[in-house]
Length: 259
Image 1: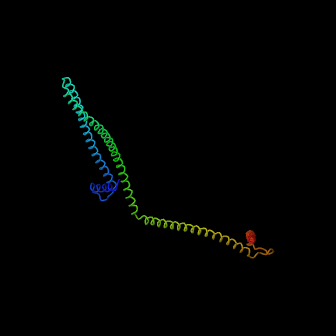
Image 2: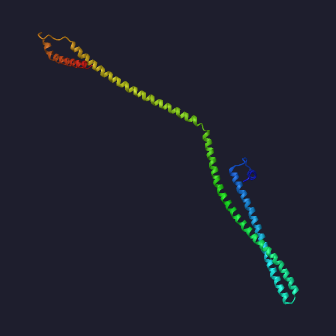
């Protein structure tokens, strides 16, 4: 398409469809279809005119053939009547129509070729228009989809996505910090509980050792000293206590040796 044809199409589209944009795709497609349909109308008119001219030429050719046949009969009739001069004139008239018929036949053949060519062009143009209409609908659908996608992308660009995502990230950070504090508190509580039990165990060992140490430092009763009745009653108990103390002392010695 040349530059002037392009400018003509743009101007025609603006005038026919009252659009502000010079090359709106939908309007340009509509204008292209309109131009092709206008060409189709003109081509059909051309085909009709060519066929009409062909019909006139055929009639003229037929009339010339009839005149040839007529003057051929007149020439024969004149000879039969003995009028050779009249027969000659009839043959001269026949020759004139014969020349006319030859010219008409050549013109008729040419017109027939032109009409067949125009008919083929007409069929091709009709096929192209049908194909163009189908493509137009497909392109219009694609244009609609592209516009919808463009609007959607514009809406997405218009949204404050960065700030929204930043807010989500801040909330996530807060949740992570709160989870970390809760986990730390749980670990500290567990450690404190373990330390309390450790102290209890340690104090129990110290108390046991202290009791054993006190028992070992208590004054022992002389061997030859007679026991009082009350002491005699308490002697088995004291012996058991001394045995326990001795056991504790032995245990203490072993612990000291292991240090």
